Length: 115
Picture 1 (tube, rainbow, N blue to C red):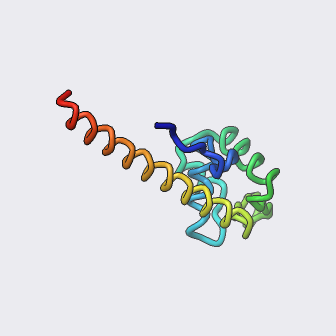
Picture 2: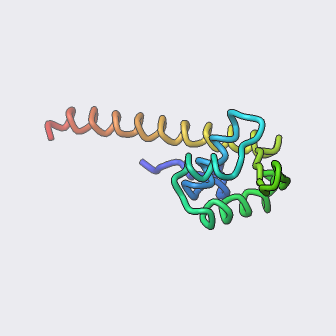
């Protein structure tokens, strides 16, 4: 039995921080950089690199501005980012379901052999 090819998985979300950023942003209009950094429990540089990668593929918008005298950065998922994340999560679910079915079949056939 062969495993299904993960062709529908989106490489942009293979890094855990990029996936966490996209998942967080899928539930809100936008989030401040520091809020995302704290949620993901990563350094500024790790989040910055993840955000840059997602922006490069068109999944993330980055908006800079100031609140009072302090500069702030806000991140938001683009419509393409929302769609790509949904496809990626669907592909992960399909992969997990196929693996569970294959595993159940292996247990059933092993039991039939008397192994």
